[in-house]
Image 1 (spheres, rainbow over the protein chains, first blue to last red):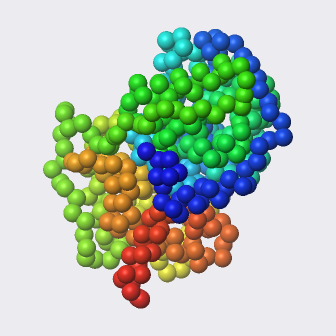
Image 2 (image 1 turned 90 degrees about the horizontal axis):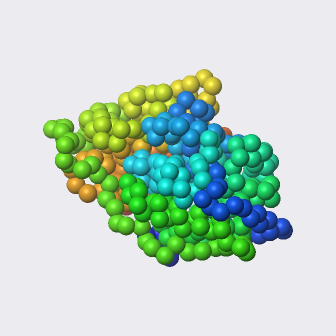
Length: 158
Length: 254
């Protein structure tokens, strides 16, 4: 298992060197909601995923925009185009749910643990610095999520 | 990841994030996060274990019902040990086993290697019902030819007019590596993720070609090539090992 302590000293240093650049935001938003069993949940990932035929993410880091992943997408049609190679991709190649757990979410909805899976899910490119670059597109996407009646978002990194 | 949670929440949408690097999440303090002690690239822990993935999902989603925050909880379990690889039952294994060539030019060795892996990749697609290849529109052999041309004499040329050279190299290298990984994962034997990574970088001609592209990117004045010299091509861990191998081989070695 990979905790920072399990990584090579060089990898530890790479990740720890970013900590001083990461500051808490000045505000502490906290939104309460309905019981989980009544919520409509969307997955938003920073794994650089896109649907086959859609534009892959650009390696230059111009990745502040996002890609739309419809809830009825097939596993065979979801691709990964992430700028970084410093993480495992073999898990995603074997089972997309290890990164983008759409099938698990649908099961939780079927079992009434959550109310429903949203009609659309989304992917950004991760590893963008500074993280405040996400603000514009994140606020834009919030409007789309609200139109889809989403009242819970599960965020998954790689 | 944590930044997205902050902005969505400011816009009125409750969020919970899975965190892979606890130190980063603790610094940013997003509204709700579940730190998981899993490998980078596997936020749900382990492939093909729906019960474990559901457990992680449930632990994360439960944080949405907390009364006060910010919340940064720790998931208490390590991911189950997992080797990639096909279940042998019901699979007709190809009879050809890959023998990586040690003679010939790098272009010949790469072409031979890609050809040898094709039956295994076909098997992987049958086994998994999917492949993550396809972003370039090229065949694996076509990708190999493009990559060899890019490290030949003369300036590299993209395989698609609407795609710059650096972006084309990134898509092509990601896709060819996925071809190798998907093929390797169904060969006989048990394959941990680190074993496949080590095989790719230290034992294949493709790993050598990628390292040559990396060295070309390091020397390039073109700013668009910079990602290939940093995060986008050769992982830091592999880079260290490959440089050590070059140094051990002495001056004049590839």
